[in-house]
Structure formats: C-alpha cells, structure tokens
Image (cartoon, rainbow, N blue to C red; front, side, top):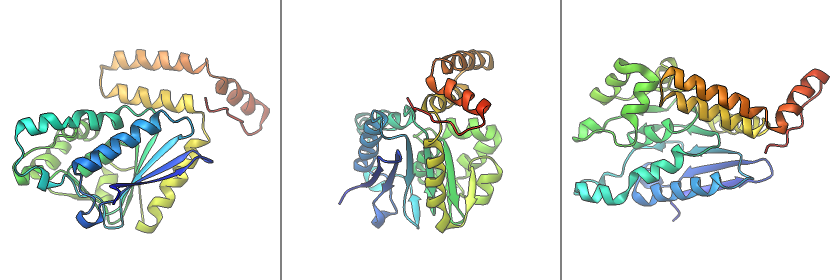
Length: 257
C-alpha cells in the first residue's frame, strides 16, 4: 500500500498530497517521510504544479512519529536516517504549501503542518508536541518554529507540558489561519490553492522567501532582502500586466513564469 496518495491537477496547477497510513493515524515512519520528500522534490521542479495541499484523513492529519521505529533506535540510527534532508525538501519548497488539518496533528504531525505556509483546520483538529511525555523532545523544527510563531512563553507551554490545543485556540494564538467545520476543510484548502494559482508565481515566490527570511535574520537584514525582492519583482512580465490591468480596469492575464 502506498504511504502517500497524490492527486495531481495539471489543468489548474494544484496538487493534493494525502498521507495514507490509516491503520496508525498517518504516523510518520521512514517510508512516509521519504515519500513526502520525493513528492516535494519532484513537485518543486515541476512547472505545472503551482500550489501543494497536504491532507490526512478525517481522524488524523498525522499523529506523529511511528514510535515502533524509535523505541530501540540509537543516536547513530537517527544520524543515518538523515531526517534533516527529508524535512529539508519541504522547507526549501519554493511554492505555496497549504495544510488541511482534521483530527490529530501531534509531534511530527504538528511539525509537518508548521512547514506549510497556511494551515486550514477543522474543529476536530488538535495540535501539540507531546514528545516530552515519551522521554524525548521535538526534532523536526518545533522548538524553533513555534518560538518564532508564538514567542518564548507560548512555545514553552506547548513544548514543556506536551498538552494538545484545539483548533480555536490554535487560531487565537496565530498558529492556524482559519477554522471551519471538518467537512469544509479540504474544499476550503483547495479553493485557497486555486486562488493562489491565479496569482503571479514570481510574486508569490518572492513573498514566501521574504517571510521565511524574516525567521532567519535580523530586521535590518530582512528589510534589505525585501527591498531586493521588491526590485526583482519589477523584472517579471506579470508586474507590467498586473499594473496595466488595474489601470485599465480589467482582469489581469498573468503568464505565471
């Protein structure tokens, strides 16, 4: 059975990646991590794929790491698995990524959602980093991304206690973009993806890169990066088309380079 189901829509540029380990609530084993990395590596290089949506099942987006692969693992085992490279293909993706979350998004599942650019959550969604409860800590970026998103004290509460939060709380603290009824989550995520497809690809890429850069550097360095990205946008034909269309009061016809 495939660890991941891929629904490609080359006509509209949206690709849906669905985690598919229903028997373990989509827990991340090495095979699933590699399947995700391979999918992101390929889609990032595919010009027909414009926006990526990650989804799970009704019960779980992703319940976290598959503990069966970790209970007897040594530090050398972890080193050889190169999780940094597997997460890195998602981190480095230049295209917008939307997470459609229903049910559990815990541990590595929460970290996977944090790798996206927008999180759309169902009312059943539960986010958390429970690693301390099994004697370890997060290893997929949660200590860094949650701190940058929530600040020190908000991150510490999630990371030290290991308790999950519901979708409404996640939205209130800025972790989630929207909360909807569960049956509306995937349609909404796909609708947002379609809206992004209709916008100029170069501008979207520059915005994403600039926001991610803000998480890495000082304010002055980030502002300099933004200025350079702003100037780069003026080299895109979509800039001329977008501004001319606005002045002419007509819909823009972007080339999506």
